[in-house]
Image (cartoon, rainbow, N blue to C red; front, side, top):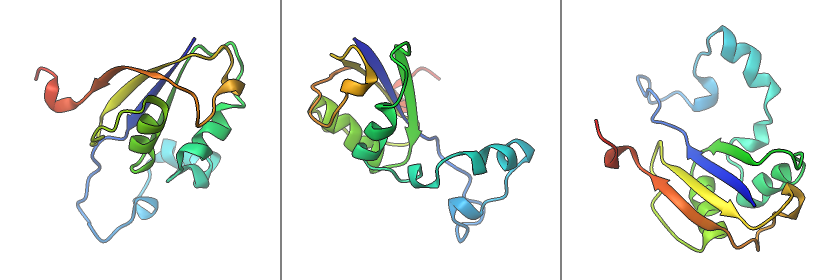
Length: 123
């Protein structure tokens, strides 16, 4: 059994609504980290996430992916057969009936164990 956590990123600062995510200024850490990530992962679809997850070592029991919609919402629906609005900063915890990440596919029948939304949590 593996566990996948899916997080839709939190609300960003839209002080300048004309600026795209990729054009926002980065701090020093962001300047180091951003080029190291796959640009194609930015608005990835479930098959693209699954392709990357398939390469993970079997020793990883719990993994989190972080991204944008519609990919995050589609991933939850695909793996659990449950369609839920997945607004910013939502987290889903999905139990997967697999023993290695290489077994994960779009046909994997996972179980939605938790779905947390910020508005449902205590202040």
